Image 1: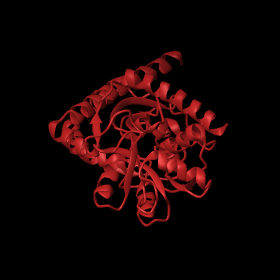
Image 2 (image 1 turned 135 degrees about the horizontal axis):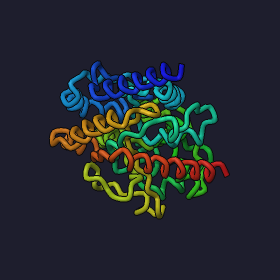
Image 3 (image 1 turned 120 degrees about the horizontal axis):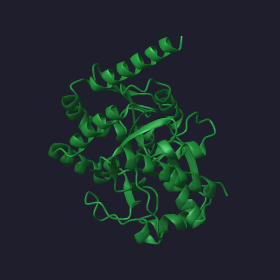
Length: 317
């Protein structure tokens, strides 16, 4: 009996190794846990042709939105760790769980950390043109004059639209009402329609609407200006010292994925984000490619998760 068990285990191991060596042997699905048209989709649109060419198999995007990203993320956590189901999402991966008791996954333990693919220069704080504020200090004064009257779009607790807004409120002692949305596109449309007052949104989305005059940009949440909006100062420059919140985009597999599969996927992503054509597209989107190695990315996720838990505690005080 013991010998049969040993033989079965050895066969499974050998089969797993063979499978890993032959990876990929079929199309790959990339789950984005947010609605179509958001920043993760724009990044994937730039790199998927390179990934498909590098891996030799189609790489297909599937948007599984819901509950601020919880639905799609939990789905990936429950899939086989064979490298054929990826999760591609934002910093909300670690930021959402501390804010939502319904999170059914651990962002550190339930995933294999493949790479930090890209990051932006911070979110753009944009307002509707009818808001009587030309800079952050005027916005703060307006909020203090009428507590609870100003509104901001929240595309999900723990997302890059939520945390900067709540940190700003905490730092300035202001009362600004959070209005929930299912995604960035819906929130942006309502902001342009004047149904809400302000939104922390990706620079690539902000740029087109600022240039058209439909929105006004007051600040960037990173620690340096972006050449796409060179006249827009950072939050730090406008008196909120130490304010530095950028959005980043990572790739994960379910926990316990084979190391050689992880390395092969990381190599494909690294090649894609370093491609001159992709770099040019990223530059237009206000992004920079990173391709952080798996071990370094795992440590990064641990640190970011701890930071998110600390922010959640401070916001709830």
